[in-house]
Length: 160
Image (cartoon, rainbow, N blue to C red):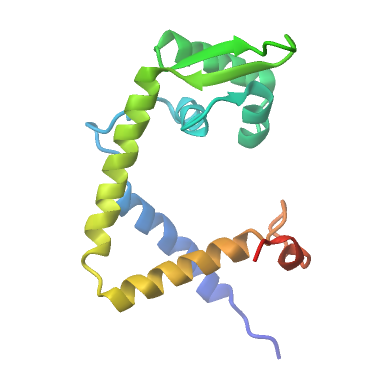
């Protein structure tokens, strides 16, 4: 009889958000904490390098018109700039401004500091176990397709 993972899956699903909230809670002093979520997701996708607007829309699974609206607001806030491709005017790029880069850099530093403080509370063996398990989970979640179905061909596509 196959093992039922329903209870374990429920516990896992409930635990991850708790860890993320406690480790990466939004502090009012944190750079960019005042941005609406969708604007923040756009800024985060542009860190650390510029991308074409089409790629950002695909990554964030949003329409080009919705993204254009968000980019306009971020430009008004001085966080993002847009430019046309030099060779193909149909292609537009978005990039963080120096102010946007500085704020994202400070945000990342603050979040890494929180993680460092947590990890230093663990023994070297515990840190190794945590990191090994997280890497395994990343590897395995990459094998889930769009609908969350295990992709049997992932092993063949993963670089070893």
